Length: 301
Ligand SMILES: C[S@@+](CC[C@H](N)C(=O)[O-])C[C@H]1O[C@@H](n2cnc3c(N)ncnc32)[C@H](O)[C@@H]1O
Image 1 (cartoon, rainbow, N blue to C red):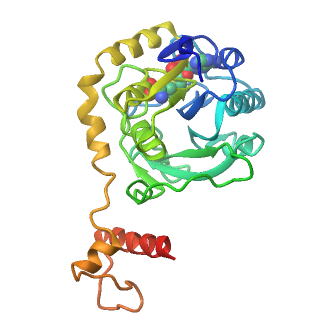
Image 2 (cartoon, protein in one colour; image 1 turned 60 degrees about the vertical axis):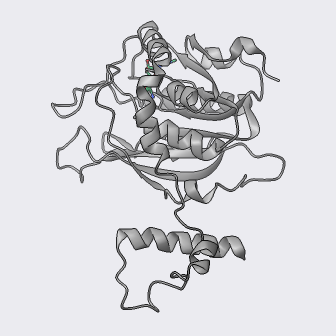
Image 3 (spheres, rainbow, N blue to C red; image 1 turned 120 degrees about the horizontal axis):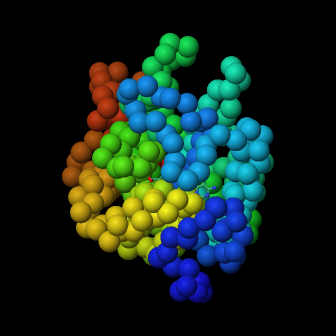
């Protein structure tokens, strides 16, 4: 049982130092977007420059990666067996060399359960050195419980949202690099479903993850170095009801219209799509139906 002193608080300080003070196995699910070590370059007119009020985002890359490995291993320690952590990052380039989050994730204790693509649809750099990079990545990291390296299955209404998530970046938040509320809502709602537990964000910025946790009636713990952002988060948490409609917009997407059994009972299509049914055109809508069909079929067998 976690002591109440840690719950529903934002601890101001350096993430690694604070993590070392927290007890083992207290977190059910975490979500974060750490500083990306992007060198604080000017980004142009399309998107805000990322410059935090009280932290630099400019470390030698080897030091940055070592710090992220240490942070992720500490998060592993404070997560319950069977718990998950969702780590938002992106592919970067330094002097032509590609820097991939897998470079350091594979050196941590976590099992990498999935790589999710976050399609932001817009991003800062529109120079033509590469195709316009409008995606980020979200890594679903899993802490095994005994010998179970896979964990529990998601409910179909969550799993059917697929591994490509399309949310535009947050625009109205004064923080320089917030993620949209829909992102932590999707994570927490999918993994916790009806369960209640403790949600964690070790770089909580403007408190988006914590607001999502509060809306979903979860306990939370946040860490953030900047006093200004801690105050911003506390303000958002107090006024969380004003963000309910954005949370509901996301939650409405978690739905299975009809199960295989229900379609069968109603005499609706339950057969195979695709090559055997050449006349049927695959549109986005029936692609989702098709996913659903295969999902339910596998569930039965
Ligand atoms: C990408 S932002 C997180 C934004 C957050 N997801 C949101 O929606 O507002 C990263 C945050 O990490 C904080 N930060 C940077 N270095 C830190 C450190 N060493 N310890 C704690 N927080 C740090 C920054 O102040 C910034 O708010």
